[in-house]
Amino acid sequence: MDYQQACDFLFGLIDYERKNEAPNFDLGSFTDFLSRVGSPHRKVRNPILVAGTKGKGSTAAFIASCLREAGYCTGLFTSPHLISPTERIKVSGEPISRRDFSRLMAFLKPFVREEKCSFRTVFEILTAMAFIHFVEKKTDVTVLEVGLGGRLDATNVVSPVLSVITSISLDHTQILGHTLKEIALEKSGIIRPSGITVSAPQSEEVRRVLQDVCAVRGNKLTFSDGHSDVVFRSLSGQQFECRKERFLIPLLGEHQVENAALTIDVIRMLNRCGFRVALSHLRAGLEKIDWPGRMQILRSSPLIVVDGAHNDESVLALRKAVKDYLDYDRLVLILGISRSKDLKGIIQPLSEIADFVIFTRASLPRAESPNELLRIYEGKAPASVEPNMKRSLQKAFSIAGRKDLILITGSLYLVGEALALPRSHLHPKIYSLHRSS
Image (cartoon, rainbow, N blue to C red; front, side, top):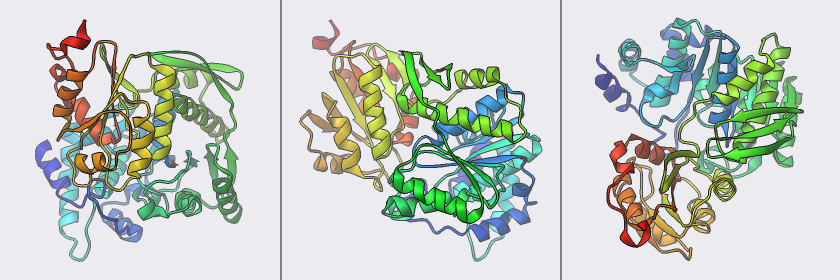
């Protein structure tokens, strides 16, 4: 099986990340499947689960980077991917090779095919592959970003040495529940009896849920309270102060400072659990994080920024970051959103800072149609629709001048399509004459 065949088989399975339907989770069935392939979930060393609504991927990447700098062979499993599924499974910062990806898919395929009354999903197979890869590479510690919720997520079959919960807000309400309490209960599914949990600051309602769950399970809960202040910022990153120490991160936005501050408290707790991560390792890990698609600058003139904000809270954080961190004349917004999201809750905050809006869609079934986004749009800025990312960029370049900002957001899948475009699409030779002078 070559890499393309492996991808064809994988994405021929049920893919709830891309389909517009509620998933039917069965953690018991997935555990049985793992037992048939050697129970790799029981052999992964020192797993750390990271759940939450906003910032879980960034936080997981921060934690893994710090542990790697401390000399630990570190596994990292995240989702979704931007361009290649190999991005989701990393050891010591390196994605799984296409050869290993293909080999492990060939190993798993017969076990998938032999199931008569069940089925496996794309996320489950990637999770199983990650477990096997981490065992083969003998990772010392593994950081696992929870895919959805927590209680029934495929990653929740391990016994975590530490559970981490980032900021919780309303998202995936058709699956996780329509209230913060319901969603918090689903996320708290990663909290283990007699375990340890580190949580980001939460609303009072969420805070009570986590406290109640930890009390019942005898879990030691710590809320991150590391107050942080940004002391310097530029397009290449920002410096902030936390617990009387200064740190530098290459990611933009105060929300990334919050994720880094949570990481600092996670590392402090890991040190109490027997890990050895010095302050120098912590600093280097935060500074060297590689996490594309989050306030990532692709071009400076005109300024092109991509960000995977895809829910109400992350969109508000993005809007604030754009206003606080970026200098531009006009903003041309390219926006594509999944059908299951709060469309108005995402469109309105971003349209308020836009001078022109281009509605488009990523190439996946559950992406909302650009025409529907335009129909519910109530902003004052002129707006149009384009069928895909390539056409959207062409339209944006016909509008934007050298001192303007083109912001691409609303979906990590849309961001991935922008990153996958040939570099020539980001450097067109012809500009709109009335804006280029």
